[in-house]
Image (tube, rainbow, N blue to C red):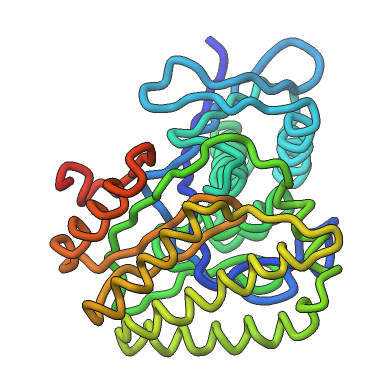
Amino acid sequence: MNLVVQATAPSNIALIKYMGKTSHSENRPSNASLSWSLKHLTSMVQVEFTSDKGDKWEPLRLEEGYHAPSLSKKGQQRFLSHFQFLKKKMGISGSYIVRSGNNFPSDCGVASSASSFAALTKAAWALAKEKQLSGIMTREELSCLSRHGSGSSCRSLFTGWARWENEGAKECLYPLQTLEHTLILLDDKKKDISSSEAHKRVTTSLKFKGRTKRATERLAHLEEALQNSDWKQVYKTSLEEFEDMHELFETSNPPFSYRNQQSRDITRWVEEFWKLHEDGPVITMDAGANVHLLWRQDQLSIARQLLSEVTDRCPEVRLLQSPGWKDSF
């Protein structure tokens, strides 16, 4: 019977963004970032030994809740190149079929590359352990390896807050440690401009000058707010940060935009909700049109109110909720 190993990893949403690189080949970031792991949005990777020559990728099938991404030849090569990098690092020989899938749409700004490359890194380590080639590796060590495949994947080795600077990410513990998440899925189509391309283009924006300083200052403000459980400041800092990132996209040369009218409207409605209630969700967006909301667990009633308004105004949207609130709407 062939050896098969399997691993899963969560997507993550950064409140302080990784945008811009000091090294594209090694995925080294221009600034430190801080993210929250989305435990309900996950990727699964299976690795199976094959007697055929050479590694190959296949879509993951027959796993409940998971569907296979449509990987281009370039995407498959990128995934397998990281697997081969991991094999070399861990002393793994032989050829393998690598299968992957997500329980959420890929390539639309929900960090599917982060979760899939993190899951691949964990699967390679599981394979090395099965073959008795590796001892214990810490999550921090796996994070450093995962970064080589996808920068933001280094944060998906953790289950809560993760801070990434330089080599890999580390877990952070703050009083605000138990949160609920809503993904407002506005567009599940593959985005026209990849995140890798966006990292290159933002450097052409006149606003990129000073970006590292702005992000570093916001990170300090955010960490202070999280330590003090200052939810309103977390909201304000996160809003400023993702607006900054999207303005870089929209002022690059040539300019491009991930935001659509609905995502702009929802951002405005959240701001109005905060002004009216002096409370609300933390809002952010990644490199896509979809909107992420983070909530404290005591905010269920206002979450129902706001999300009811959103779905009334945009009846075609889908809401993907974290498990704690999944059956509450």
